[in-house]
Amino acid sequence: MSAAATTLRRLEALRLEYAGDAGVRKRDLLAQLRGAIFGSAGTLRRYHEMLCFMAAYPDDARLLAALRRELRAFSRRPDLARWRAELADSGIAGTATHYNYFWMKARWLAQRFPRRFLINWSAPEFEARLKAALPLLLPWHQAEAVKRSALPVRRIVDRLRGKLTDAAFLAQAIEGMAGDSFAREHIHDSIDAAFVLQPGHGFPSRTLAWHGAAPWVFRSARPSAARPDLKAELRRKPLGVRQVGAIEGRALIELAREAMLTRGRDLAAFSWGDLRDVLLVDDGDGLAFALIGSLPERRLPLPAVHGWLILRNRVPVGYGQTDCLLAGAEVAFNVFPTFRGAEAGYLFARVLASAHHLLGARAFSIEPYQLGEGNQEGIESGAWWFYYKLGFRPSAPVPRRLLAAEQERMRRQPAHRSSEATLLRMASGHMVWQPEAGRRAWLPLVPGLGLARGWESASTAPQAAMRRFGIGGTPRWPSDQRAAWERLAPFLLALEGVEDWSAAHKQTAVAALRAKGATREIEFLRRVDAHGPLRVALERLLKSASRGARRQAQPGLPSRRARVSTGQ
Image 1: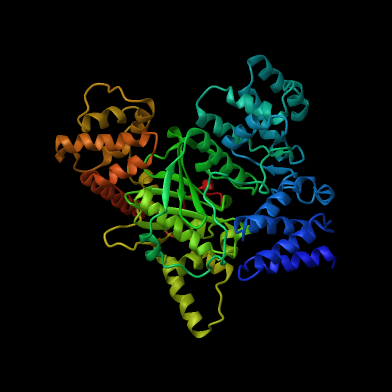
Image 2: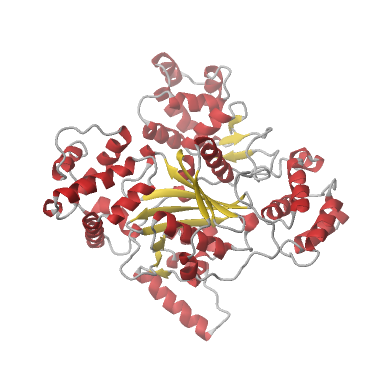
């Protein structure tokens, strides 16, 4: 083992030490490694991860300055130049990133990095789909030429793209097609092209990820790995909440997108984030959350979706998503691999606490994907037992029976660990934590609404819903609020008892529902939860949908909600 590798191991052993002169020893070891050349891509990557971890949990200003200096120079290292190909897709500054980006991310990259964003032609499985789709994206004379051409699709794109890169050309062609953003998204994601973002100065990386306006502290003790008391954490409010301006909002959304991009992930709440709907939450002790709302056109009809970028001393260390409705929240949560093993339970608890105080969440659920259904990372990380030990319990019959059997095995054999096959079956249903009597996690019931009954035609439902709620004529609402009403209208026609409401209750319900199209979607959550008749009617609708879905379900075919947006 080389001297540099030995010194790195000593530094890794100190990463969670803060007592006595630990900070001094870390600086000394870092000084010894400055200018060192590592003999393998794996060792160089370990050094990079150690720098990132220590920057998120720094002992003092001198150590942080040394860490930041090393990270800023990382892309210029001679050993990085040697191992650049092996470190592709690592997110390290100076390396390339390959990914099949979804539409919004591809569009964003084509606009922001037009010279470095390319199609990855070494992954040719998409080429037939691209050639079939091109005629839909081009003027008629070019479309006819493409249909009749025997050239490989790469040659066709090269002839058409002019000075644009191939990826920028494709993004521009999709952007110019007829239809709305949903049609563009569908055609792009149907092509499912492979892309590569080549490295360049100022390009996204995990190395330099940082939000200078977030709170920070220097540490004197290691972060707590103890299992948190969720009820106690729920009672503790964040230290402060700040509505950020458009410039900082854009910076936080781009930081969130880059944090996902450089880890081969995607999250719809970040990709479709609205720079007008961003909060920076100061949770104390250098922990902060960027709470990002979605553009009005991309909001779901009922739940309010927010993305959470978790910042430790200004460094992104994880992310989450909450889908909220009727004081319930479905939670997705992930700590980035670099920062695992330090305080995952505490970070999760503080996401729940912030969702409680900011979004009104009082009951929580975890969907099957987060637990491991279709998600190998969730199985390998033991996600199901992680949430169980924090107080979540399975809500579906099959996981409940499996839990009882596993507990009995553990009682007889304390060393027993659940097999991968068992974890997959346990992950087939939601887990819930409902600490307050009378408050439940409603989100698992929402998908059943679409299958529970026949709905009125989308073209006639908005006007019918307006008549039902006592709205005469054609109100002059902002376009986002009108679009929100149109999406909500089928549900509003299915609510029971609206005819018995007072005129005042109908009027305040309309104001609450229009808030779905407001600048900040939090207003929708607050108003709906405060409106007793509307809240009760929605709860009844969800219960009836759940009963209908169970009646229609085929034995042996559990219902699923596939959602790539969680990104985990």
